[in-house]
Picture 1 (cartoon, rainbow, N blue to C red):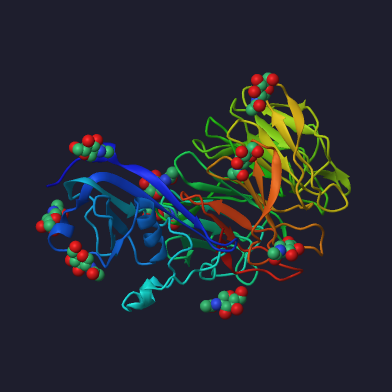
Picture 2: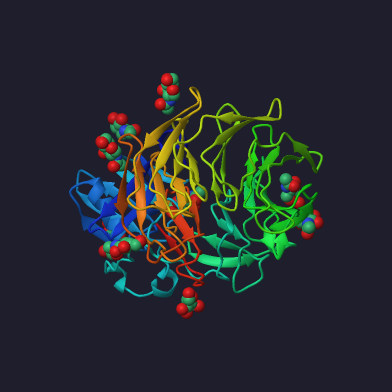
Length: 466
Ligand SMILES: *[C@@H]1O[C@H](CO)[C@@H](O)[C@H](O)[C@H]1NC(C)=O
Ligand SMILES: *[C@@H]1O[C@H](CO)[C@@H](O)[C@H](O)[C@H]1NC(C)=O
Ligand SMILES: *[C@@H]1O[C@H](CO)[C@@H](O)[C@H](O)[C@H]1NC(C)=O
Ligand SMILES: *[C@@H]1O[C@H](CO)[C@@H](O)[C@H](O)[C@H]1NC(C)=O
Ligand SMILES: *[C@@H]1O[C@H](CO)[C@@H](O)[C@H](O)[C@H]1NC(C)=O
Ligand SMILES: *[C@@H]1O[C@H](CO)[C@@H](O)[C@H](O)[C@H]1NC(C)=O
Ligand SMILES: *[C@@H]1O[C@H](CO)[C@@H](O)[C@H](O)[C@H]1NC(C)=O
Ligand SMILES: *[C@@H]1O[C@H](CO)[C@@H](O)[C@H](O)[C@H]1NC(C)=O
Ligand SMILES: *[C@@H]1O[C@H](CO)[C@@H](O)[C@H](O)[C@H]1NC(C)=O
């Protein structure tokens, strides 16, 4: 009997933390009152257990790396685990009070990276656990100051910033296997560039640095896995920002320009994908590099901080109005900062985190409310950091990883911001210090931390799940 069951499907996230360094989770879809039809005829579960409730049955599935699905019968306390051979999601039989759950591809954490080599042995019933910080396979090259994005198909894309390989290289990681595969290279090598999703899912990479600041711009088509070089910017720039506006145009602002170091730019320009052209728009009130840019819900762009001169750190903020093309000063932050991060919270506020105020990383964070144009003080980080990553988690809290205090102190530490209490707490460390790395949140909520630099000139080809 084949049935329509869309209305019965819902998601379960199953999560287990036995000791601090052992966090495991899996996401499963769930269907009540049905079993796999094949379970009644041709296919057999690879383990039968007696469990007092469905969550314990799920826990058993989490413990068995080969487990892809469960059926639980509460009347008999029967818990059946099915392996990879199950592919019967469209073919279910009614059975009152049975619950069938299937692991959603790519959501198991840590990954079963060795399943292909061990799946024929019977020792899979052991509960060997990968530590939190499970590494992926190595990237093709070490990289830092690259860009990273999660593609629609769930793969993680990184480009540029390679250290022991060509700076134009790009890699794709399949989170289900942890394997990185080189993808098409850019025309131009670069680091300190930007990467943003255009409407439609392609990725636009702008500027960056390779011997000199670059004006070149390329678009990665994630369905064909190739790059197309498009119109160049009017100004070469790196450590600038790029923001995709609600109208689909791309706003680049500031950065470090051509003509020698510390040539910080106040210019801004707009790319129109429809006409493949760049035009200057209004200029920033202050030249800036290593600032942040956030697109607000009202469509305006908030730019914060950065450096305006060799030792001039900014606390000012500006708003770009796409309707007029004009930048106006917003309320200033309480702290000067560059190489900080800005996260758009689910409540609409922008959380600005850490950065360098001239003498190393700072612990200060601040929250911007765009309806009042005001800043309020956020909780303080446990350590002062810059060039860290900040990721909004699925529950709305913010994960901050790594970064540096100064040119000698690199962090493996991780902090989580609780939006409702406005406080930070240290969480389990990464496996290694990482700075100038990337953080990409997968649909499962797991964050993939890739590359970076671990100590002076110690560049990383490793990536880890967090
Ligand atoms: C399962 O079946 C029983 C008996 O038909 C019904 O009462 C119950 O609502 C069903 N549960 C779900 C979630 O459909
Ligand atoms: C459903 O399962 C039965 C029993 O395993 C099998 O004979 C049948 O081909 C399956 N139907 C589909 C559409 O997969
Ligand atoms: C589990 O029980 C089913 C029948 O309920 C049987 O077909 C299957 O072989 C059993 N599996 C194991 C590993 O004992
Ligand atoms: C992965 O890279 C590390 C260095 O970061 C190296 O020690 C290790 O041998 C590499 N592993 C493989 C399988 O190439
Ligand atoms: C990406 O390439 C595909 C295949 O050529 C094409 O259909 C699609 O329009 C391209 N996307 C964009 C936005 O250019
Ligand atoms: C990208 O792939 C599409 C479809 O295969 C092809 O038409 C196009 O010429 C390719 N572009 C480049 C720059 O290779
Ligand atoms: C922003 O300020 C307005 C006006 O005081 C307030 O109503 C709103 O709740 C604030 N936003 C958040 C997310 O706190
Ligand atoms: C975590 O990393 C920090 C440095 O970032 C280090 O000081 C601390 O000792 C580490 N904690 C553990 C438990 O390893
Ligand atoms: C966040 O803080 C609130 C209020 O103190 C607390 O109830 C909640 O459990 C915390 N959430 C997390 C995920 O720590």
